[in-house]
Amino acid sequence: MNIRRLEAHEALPLELLLEADPSEQLVRRYCADGYCFIAEKQETVIGVFVLLAIDAATVEIKNIAIAEPERGKGLGKRLVLVALEEARKLGFTAVEIGTGNSSFAQLALYQKCGFRMKTIDRDFFTRHYTEPIIENGLECRDMVRLDYRL
Ligand SMILES: CC(C)(COP(=O)(O)OP(=O)(O)OC[C@H]1O[C@@H](n2cnc3c(N)ncnc32)[C@H](O)[C@@H]1OP(=O)(O)O)[C@@H](O)C(=O)NCCC(=O)NCCS
Image (spheres, rainbow, N blue to C red):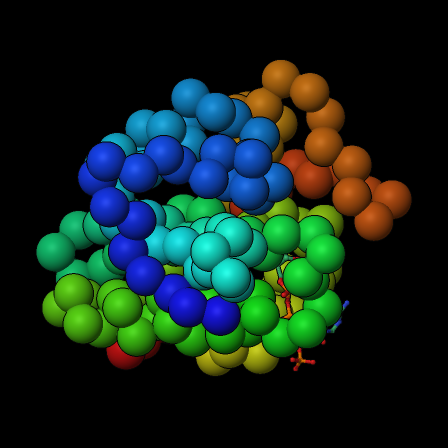
């Protein structure tokens, strides 16, 4: 898997980005303002992550996704670790990531990569998304924010 920055003239891997965030409008906005990286396997995009600065010291992983057939093979973990490394290279000293209260696999993954829970934004998903999101038999309502000190 080769990971590189998406160049300005290249199309966004929208299908993949929408797997992590159903709002195309939000996705397009933060991709335009942030740093989009892609992971390729034999010239096919199989992964993506987007870094967006919160302030001069902190950057957020706004989106991260691995193509369905490639999941569960350790690639998501590799992508998170590369995102931390790229954030360090860009000069940030902390990385944040947010996920849903019902996203058990993501909560496990980020903590396995060294992230610690920071805050909970109650009813974030209820406020920002019109359709209810159900995951693991549970309504996704609150955003759990985690951080990693570089
Ligand atoms: C989230 C995502 C990027 C993870 O990618 P992946 O390639 O499947 O992840 P990995 O194979 O690297 O596995 C992740 C780790 O989490 C662990 N994990 C997953 N579910 C778990 C659970 N319920 N309990 C404990 N650990 C769990 C795995 O065991 C693995 O850890 P390990 O390497 O120590 O065994 C991928 O599932 C995806 O693209 N999902 C859709 C988009 C999305 O939800 N993005 C995140 C939005 S917040």
